[in-house]
Image 1 (cartoon, helix red, strand yellow):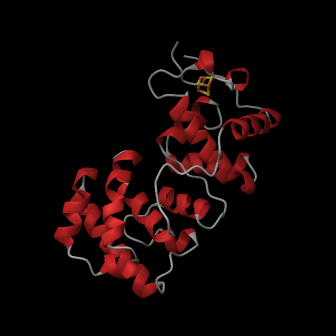
Image 2 (image 1 turned 30 degrees about the vertical axis):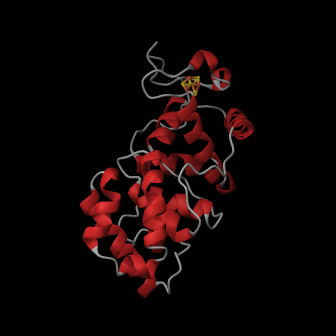
Length: 216
Ligand code: SF4
C-alpha cells in the first residue's frame, strides 16, 4: 500500500485541467429532456446502473411526462414500469411523492437550491448536485462511489465518508471547479480508475497521482 503526502496546490490544479482535457463535464449518462425527468431518473438510479434506468424511463416519461401526472399516478402501475430498477416499491412511492410535492409546493418547477432539493423524497445531496449541475449550472460536489474512490487515490481526501469528502474537496478547489471536477473524476473512475483493478499503467494522471490505498 502506498501512502503519500497530499498533493500540492499546483498539482491539484494540473489534475483538474488534465481531467477537463480528457472528459466532457457536461456528459450525462442518464437520458432526460426536462429537469423533472432528470430528477426522476436520478432517484431511480440508486442501487442500479444508469443503463438500467435508461431502459425504462422512455415508457415512464411517455406515460407520466410531468410532476402533476406522476404525482397523481397509480402506484401499482408505476411499480410495474420501474420494477427492473430494484427497490421498486420504495422508488415508486418516492417518485410519486416527488411529483406531487413539486406540483403542489414548487409550482411544478424543480427547485434550484440544495436546501429545497433535499426535501424531495428520494433526493439526497448527490442527486441534488446532479440536478444543480446539469439543469441550473450551479456549483456542486457530487460524491458518488466513483468520485470518492478517485479523490481518495489522488490523495485529495483521507476519508471514504461522502460528507467528509465533500468538505475536503470544497476546501481544496474553488467553487467554479466543483461540478466539472465531479463529472470528470466520475468518468475517470468508470474509464480507468476502476474499483478493483485501476489501470494505472494506462492512466494520464499517473505522474500526479500518489495512488493512495492502491495495492500493487
Ligand atoms: S494512477 Fe491509478 S490510482 Fe491514480 S488516478 Fe490513475 S488509475 Fe487511479
